Length: 67
Image 1 (cartoon, rainbow, N blue to C red):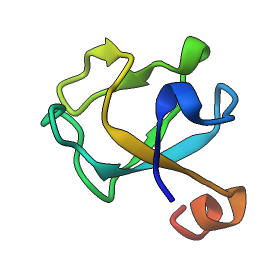
Image 2 (cartoon, one colour; image 1 turned 90 degrees about the horizontal axis):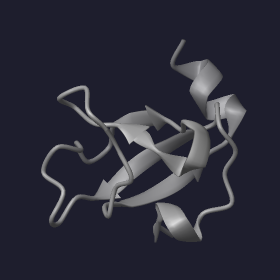
Image 3 (cartoon, one colour; image 1 turned 45 degrees about the vertical axis):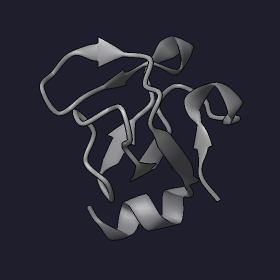
């Protein structure tokens, strides 16, 4: 289930995956993003923002599979 960043219980350094980018075209659906302090993310254009896209937290085991 996806949620907005404000509603996710994530810590800086963890990863989230974009599930819906309505109103936030600078985030790619299915792409992983590293959570920065204050739940900020770096979008596809390199800007640091608090996104209104919807994300799901990704467990470390899934992230390690992509490394």
